[in-house]
Length: 318
Image 1 (cartoon, helix red, strand yellow):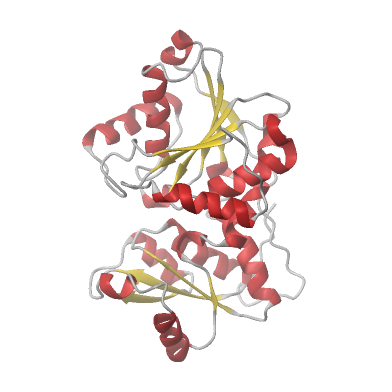
Image 2: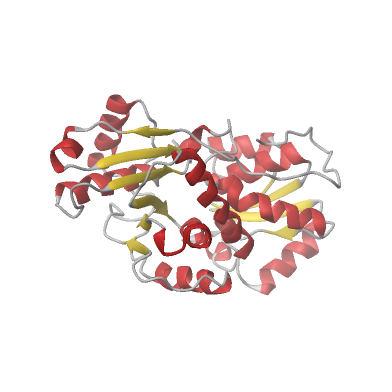
């Protein structure tokens, strides 16, 4: 359950709790029947009207730390259609934080629907050039932002920090509760930064040990091999011992790169939505679902396997 607050009442005892359970549906497909595979979907996009998907798991631990350290302003980074910026703006409105979004792209362009929503939530938008945006990790830029806008709690782009990873550990018990005793062999999710995957692997290992299902990430970036190193570093920092074959990052299903949505992917997404009544987003979840279809068609999934897909939200980007 989410604790809903009116703006400006970031009280000292406010609790930030992500959802505890989500619905699970089985996807009926002739392909799955022929191949002897069962595929389910965890509907995280249904857990809240705005703060849904994997976003609360990454944001809420950071908001808790912001509160504990006495910060009333939170700053982060993202693009013009950023799910992260969208969620942070709503969280700021809901929990009483001032929010600042540093937005990639030159000023002067019309606001996207995402940025309009964020602005209506009270977020201050700082639109910077792509060149300046690439400096977002430098102390020079951060110091300049603090000089111009006052002190703030910093959340990296996408919520990709250790608190965000640790927050995603809570996905593990949510999955176990939601499955209600059903067994799955593989858990599949889309990956942008690897934050959610690392947290999920750590959480499953913590609760299930070597009996945990295999976690398979579908990278939505072209050339995302570097994420494997990032994920390993996150797991080391969470004191999660290496377990052979506990997770895999698939890097061949990006459809041309981040934000690329070729006609064939859009047609797949429309066909899936028409058949199952489940909306996807073309940047993350459509690529993840299509990757599973491709792997089953190619015979890369053994008969009898039970697969759980995680719908991580992001529908505002449509």
